Amino acid sequence: MDMEETPLPGIGVRREITLANGRRVGVVVMRDGQIELIVSEADDPDACAASLPLTPLEAAALGGMLGAPQLVAQLTDQHSELPGINTQQFVLSADSPYADQTLGDTRMRTRTGASVVAVSRAGGVIPSPGPDFELQAGDVLVAVGTTAGLEAAARIISEG
Amino acid sequence: MHHTTLILIELGAIFLGLGLLGRLAARVGMSPVPLYLLGGLALGAGGFVPLVGLGEFGHIASEIGVVLLLLMLGLEYTARELVTGLKGSWQAGVVDLVLNFTPGAALALILGWGAPGALVLGGVTYISSSGIVAKVLTDLGRLGNRETPVVLTILVLEDLAMAVYLPILTAGLAGLSLWGGLRTVAVALLAVTAVLLMALRFGPQISRLVHSPDRENFLLKLIGAALLVAGLASTLQVSAAVGAFLLGIAISGSTAHSAAKLLEPLRDLFAALFFVLFGLSTDPHSIPPVLGLAVGLALVTSATKVATGAWAARHAGIGVPGRLRAGAALIARGEFSIVIAGLAIASGAVHGQLAALATAYVMLLAVLGPVATRFVEPLGRPFLRGRKVPPARK
Image 1 (cartoon, rainbow over the protein chains, first blue to last red):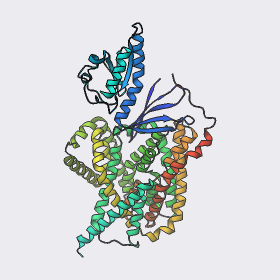
Image 2: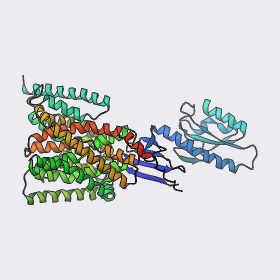
Image 3: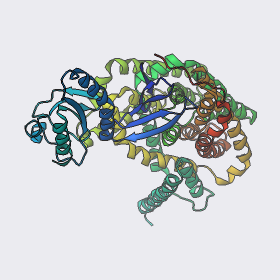
Image 4: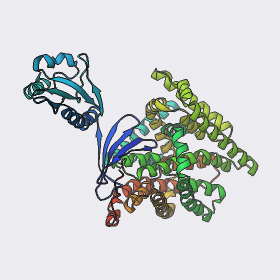
């Protein structure tokens, strides 16, 4: 699978991948940084069925959601010999009390025993974030812990 | 009434009227240019409310409008985009030029307007409005379409062609001898090449020279540089507009982006005045006699633009519906056709009817182009059957 990059003179650049079923999915990034999500039409591969303008926050959240499952699958695979240890992902929504706070402020490890092992943000992954790591709305937190610990962690992330 | 007072009142009324017209245009989602022209027609000699006394100021202001239009055009594209477009798609550029310059030039010759008339009207029918096309494609959500880069590349090539065409036009209108004309064109080509090379190598340095973190400073430097370069280009008889265009190309990166943002309102102001004054110089009574010609020319050159877009899109491996979309997108003519006609009228070297014909022609296609772009979609549908989705690359 290749990422194809096509310059759009005067407008910006289009980046896309062609899926196994032949559809194109990608983004148009404008000169001023504005992002549009594009999905090609099923019966006319040249045309677009959707082209949705995203705010930077929305784009980051979408990137996180798309990137995190693969990370979770990898970690789950690695803990498969340790019974009782699970991996789970949480999306930090904009109304979470910890948006714009540090990871240390959540005191997640102390309160639940679960630890955040990675944060997926804007399509990239930040491994082993420290206590002074600043959380942003749209971040996807990947946490490892017991089932009970992870449930408690989910509550902390959403309610405080 | 005092002369200055009268001018202030007139300008105020014009801008206020244009603002209202622009609002109307935005509401129906069309380009304001045809409405500005219409406004000018209504106010000009023989119009409903004749205006007087704008003479010298109006002349300078519309000249600045043209300089700003071309400067913004140059800012829109980077030197690299121009060179890539030229290398990869020059054939499409040639097809575009042959198919769309010829009808205008031929009509001018048939009407007996001579070589200068042919040069002007050919240019008017050749150049699509990059402003209208880019806006329509964005509004229709077609930026992700595969034919869109093809359309944009043709626009880039047309704009680059302007840098060579405008000096030729200036020379042709000034009635220069063959030797004088060749010299002007050589100077223009040399200037274009030099600027492209400089922009490719020293783009960041040139940008840093103009850039300033302070808005006021930045604006003054930009306008100063633009007018200075435009004036110098004019002395070399390369056309002031080309000088501004080349300056725009030389400025690149984030400087170009912030410059475009800063200049946009000024461009809108002066360009609006330019369009109105162009309309003012045309007697509305001269429009009906050429209306039939304008409609015919519009139909023929719509067909040739569709053919151009379809040819280029086919060349890029795009299906029939995409080819039609690409062709229809290119139909719109607008600001630069008027710039060309305006230069011709100002020189006084062409037949008076040309202004009327160009005005009617641009008003038609600035409106019809976007409409055609929107409604060409269903026409391509029947061709979809049997077109297979390309296999995924692994």
